[in-house]
Image (tube, rainbow, N blue to C red; front, side, top):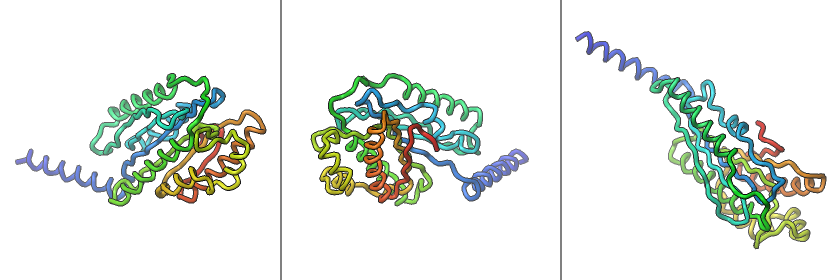
Length: 251
């Protein structure tokens, strides 16, 4: 009888702790990070693994959160392979802290290996498809946020996109290396059919953070990048995204 009472007592205590976590303590969330790396120009830097690891911060009270990381290159074609790593969120009261720390260490090592290891040839490409993969990934992120919120789950989940690129589109529908197309694009982007079609298909990006990373080679390159990124920043902020620009990933 005493054993039964003890088990009942433990069950009540555990249930109370879980209830406290659900209603008082911030529940664990999942951060989804998409990294796009432009390999069309050898001078474009590569995302730094240590900065990506710091981006999702699985430390302290955040160690129970989950992360899904998607890594893809931007090349001379629209479709590129995507590699995915993930670590699920855990319930603090139903998990072991030492075991969880081992999970985090393993996940961090996998992220470092994925980003630091050679992914593809980076000897430059004659063409560059930047905007189509970018808009495609934003559609996916925005749609997932909308759908999860619509059914009342994961509203606090974070969506982050990191794009390391000079943003110089050079494809059949648009070539920013053409001075006339560049001027038309930066002065009136919504008149460009390719841009307006993709922009109109974007869902709300509320809750999505976008980090545009690039270190210009010289003053001319800096001015060109600023004009293109200004245009993208203006368009995507209209959809609710939070935009950040820098040479490296800082928060």
